[in-house]
Amino acid sequence: MELIQPQCEDPRDWVLHVDLDQFLAAVEVLRHPELAGRPVVVGGDGNPRRPRQVVATASYEARAFGIRSGMPLGVAARKCPEAVFLPSDKPAYEAASVRVMETLRSFPVVVEVWGWDEAFVGARTADPEALAASMQARLRERTRLSCAIGIGETRLQAKTATGFAKPAGVARLTRATWIGTMGAKPVSALWGVGTRTSERLADLGIATVEDLARADPEPLARAFGPTIGPSLKVLGLGGDQTPIDDTPYVARSRGKEVTFEHDLTARDEIEQHIVLLALQVTESVVAERRRVTHVAVKVRRPSFFTRTKIHKLPAPTIDATVVASTALELFARFEPDRAVRLLGVRVVLEMPAS
Image (cartoon, rainbow, N blue to C red; front, side, top):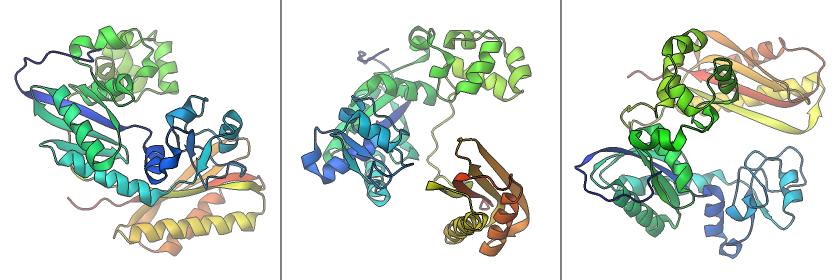
């Protein structure tokens, strides 16, 4: 892992991965300076006594108590009773994110936004560490937020390097240092390789990143398909060098879901929620002048068993009643008379003409 490296290189293309430190919590601390240095947990409506709400993010002080994203708020409160719990404030985080991305675009770089608190930056430079330090300084000056920046020749190298840079640091990974740094780590350490994929790779005798890098692509193709299989080997080698793209992201789908404080058992009440979700989702996409091509319904039981059913519409539509009726028809295919913990409605959207 190259944390500091002498710079005597010619200008070349680099990928920088910018990841804001404890973003939601940091935004809240800026709004409430008296919370600086205290364990802060953001999630739901901020009330840890209400069931079925989860942590969106936690400050580093809260993480020291073992609090992590996705953890129920009640569990977080038991781990750290003195933590400050705050409700999520989406407009505030969106506004802060806009300022962050505008600041990154003030440099002569290409910015590919990946979320409120994350972006890949394409830059041609002889000194990527100096560029990263300048970005960090300008972000602190203009937004009062800190970030870690990973540097690499690919997105995968840069994002992986960010893990070594957190918090507020800079780190570099390249093809020359990839295997030395990552080779002995399990394949699950790779961005994009989850538990299921790791298990299937283990069946092929592939346990580490170096195993994957050295793997024969043909067995991978047979096990995972002709596209995914070879692409996994590329991950083992440190990823591909697809150029950074600043084209605005266009959502392929839109959805809304709700977790109930108490399980629903009455079918008419469940159907009312489905209709409401369908209407809300359709309203949001019609406002963007998009049309719906598919409707999906997600149901989670009290046991956490979750299933999703999807249906393609005969023709693209903006009619909320069509979406709602289709969602009800999909729900009718689920097992009847069973309690529901979570409901979700998602729509697939017609892509705009290029």
